[in-house]
Length: 531
Image (cartoon, rainbow, N blue to C red; front, side, top):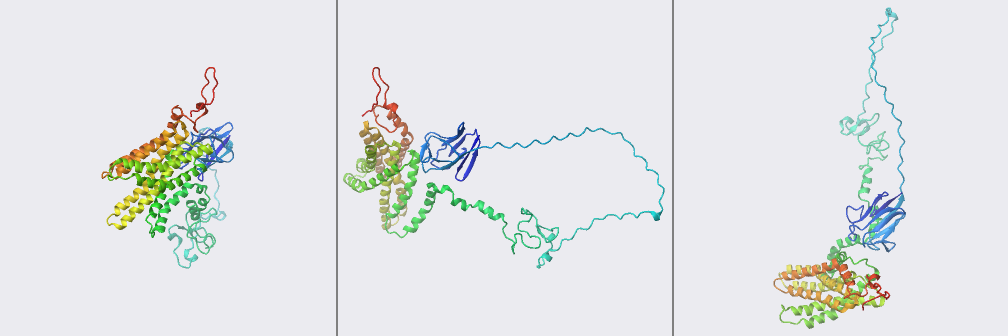
């Protein structure tokens, strides 16, 4: 029989054969992994005939030596990471379980003999003894009297200061011989903590008694384990370091930029501060899978392409098409702003998908393209918010009584600009991924994917220019509902598209069963791909 020991975050849990060990974020799990990237029910371990086996639940992913595994045979020391190659680390150890020693049985206690009443017999009368003369009689023994207890020496004899005797000091008792010492818990050697050793020396051999007992240092070491913290492997998890950075960055911004004269600096600083938080939220919502080096490289290329296209495509387009004397006209907002900005964000995503397909023969999951689209949208929103924040601050320096408006506009741009652009770009990237993976309807899918967020974007900016801006909030809510719907149903939509001849084509998720139709009568089955 073998047992199982799992160590996570410095805590070790032991399990016996026959137990089902659950691992996840659920507080009721056998091993609770408090990490936002881990599922509530991520994996479980059971003991089989060949030993302990760790089983992945669904597609939550378990990694061993950098490779995703569905099942892991646990050995004497197996290191398992959850979610990704850099995810939470579990130390799993299968070891033999020794049978508990049975103590020898105690000898039976003999039962007492049954009670038998005895008949009463009167005592025999004493025999007659003649009187003894007084001179021959032995002297009577003296009556016994116990010796008087020894008086404790007054404490003044041990301390020249003239302290009161020990029976007058609360908490002190007199020793059998020697000076008094405090009553209470004693050391393993028989010496009271902080008391006086025989001979009047302080316990511990020093010239003065220690004001703190020896257990005080041990308690501090337990409650503030600095040495254990410094060697804890949890520091290698980026999430903890991210929390520390986010707790200190606002103060660092204030100290570094308080004397800056560039009005765009606060917009860049705080927008870049918020953008990674939105990126983490989008990753948790979309669940695109592990972020590999290839994905990171594609994301960097999309961000660079978006920032390069903004001055050479977006701004000239907006100046050319957004020309109207009526600010309440809707069409210029859609054509001159919505399409201009959404095409700017969509082109780098489309280019990256086509490059991977043509030169690397790689098709990413549509959810991964959706996530990469949000990254490009965040980059666009950060650059735009920095520009507008600079304009707001410059206007606030010139006009009086606009402090509240400036602060609110600053907050909207910093917190909302990148988020909104990411939502629209994520919807567009979802359709771009579908068009690249399913080439039969590639052009219509890409056009639809860009048009939906472009119309929503134009409606959003047009509603923000109206006097009653509740319509602006309604358009934002519609955009969010549409985005959240695609995050929840992206996989099922792709599955239906994969099985529909209208869209079907090559896909990274298409199984051979869909590519190979059943053989017809008189014919042979072969690979079939819709062009």
